[in-house]
Length: 280
Length: 353
Ligand SMILES: Nc1ncnc2c1ncn2[C@@H]1O[C@H](COP(=O)(O)OP(=O)(O)OP(=O)(O)O)[C@@H](O)[C@H]1O
Ligand SMILES: [Mg+2]
Image (tube, rainbow over all chains, first blue to last red; front, side, top):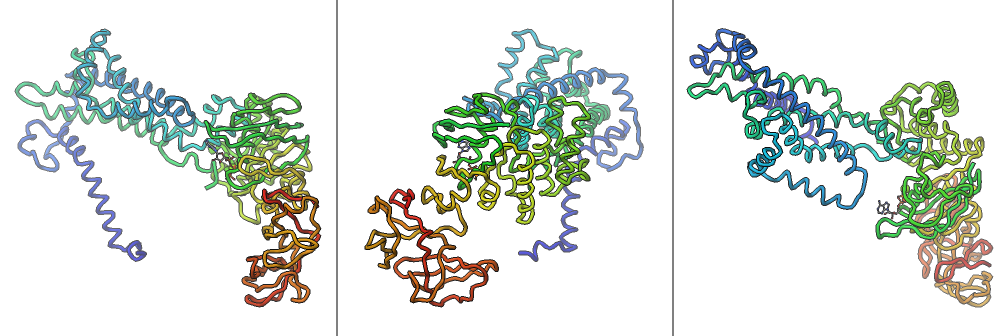
């Protein structure tokens, strides 16, 4: 057994080959997106399968930014995603803390219900959601999207937050309460700082989910003013042709906020904030 | 300063009753140690005193004031957790001064109190480190520092030394004893290490399955255990328990040997004899009360433990001082120090001579 575990040069090479293969596999679509975005329109079909275009252009980006409504879509998406991420995370943090720390009547029932909501295919509830939103007069508004996305993301985000709170020893807030904190003070001064990675991860997860959601955005939004970016992308598909270059350029631009967001929260995602709290 | 009283304290989790009718008075400045086997409710009792666990029944008073519903922060008690529970995102100084920070004490007071505590505990050079940069023993001292900075009316310790290695444990034990002498505060200390219990305690409370078995000074528990449980729990190695029946001029052991142990009045009820290993001696066969063979001889340097097999009775453990020249398999004669035996009735209660 131990002979197998010893790392021979062959095993190390194999490991890195596997890693390289995985990374390549995962990143190739992104590369292709970027490649097509900088390929001049004329060459898209003639050089369709070349790994790198013979000529590079940034014309597509220019067109997308100047001549289309892309910036408006982008802004709408940003509002919806940030709003959803912020609201969802607030609710999820509060609910996750309660699930993690308190025993109350109906706790298991609430958890079961939340799990059940995750089991329905979204298609099933599109029609009822549409009716509800229409009835309260929120069609074509960003608010409707924020509400719907928040509702859908809260269960998973809550479980995520709960697992982060579970990872923080109960002793810490008890020590805080003995030291003179109220439960809320202990939460704010001791638990919150230690939950930053959890909050970061939840924000990131919800933000990304909302950023790329298409189905409900398509159903609930018709007017160009309130279109979010994924819906806006579809406007590059006309009846007779698809404007691949511009569509890909828009796609590349759409990646920017997600990347920025994760770079920003990445330092909170680093594990080990609680190490040293307790023995072992 | 605090005189703590527990009157008929009970504790249930849902329908499960884990503790009932706990009555205990802890005098101001007393060092009380709670001992008992795992799961007997030591931590639960301590946490009820701290206010971390709701009390299901009875009255808990401090200096005559009922405190059952008072939240932990208003009880003026400091607690040292088994896990230390240091705040991982605060450095040592802030960890120790956190209670003062919460109470909005002036900065100078905080700095000076923390510095004093750090000095007492030998942490002066470490005040800027984070808990994760400390060794187990250092973390333990920070946890102690956090408690003494506050100058509380009572200290609660829940197995504070159980995560430390043997040498460090001895050192910290002395530290805690010194602390108690200096501060003269009420201290309640949970442990299952009987050396800690016997050396630190003014009085020991022995718990079993949610019941107080006996409360007394270390020597009282050792010399006059209330029942078989306490007799076997206190003292190491464990007391030998031999089955007996009343006989002429005393009692008879199961193998027929007679011992002239004075039986108290209700003599017919004595069913077991307890005798500690240190009150048995290896002697020449003709002077022996019991004879058998040495099955296992453990040389500990300061002591020698002889596990003897006595036909008709079974295993008997004898402890001799120093190095005792005896080999496994040799025949041994065992003399009983008759003045230091204990008699128990069928319910395990000790019969006072
Ligand atoms: N949340 C809970 N729900 C139900 N029973 C509990 C709960 N917490 C503790 N108990 C029970 O209460 C009893 C006392 O537990 P406690 O933690 O006080 O034991 P202990 O004496 O401190 O043991 P140890 O030496 O192992 O720390 C145990 O039998 C335990 O199973
Ligand atoms: Mg315990």
